Image (cartoon, rainbow, N blue to C red; front, side, top):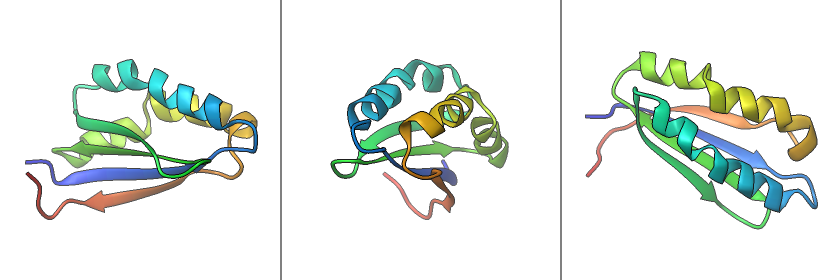
Length: 97
């Protein structure tokens, strides 16, 4: 059972909302390549607010994801796309179906 998760919240710069949405959609193949990432979701929380939620069986998978290609690409484009740095929270899953 997945016990570990991440929730990242990102805020697009004005006028960059579509670019952030497309970036998140384009990250799906990278997530699919991560063997330790059990589930990965790109979210639209509001007009300019987006998120990523992913789950892992082990802490090592969560750390690998934090140091992986998606995080690197997001940080590479952060100044261009994001209004402020992403807020990334480590989450412990208590129950799931």
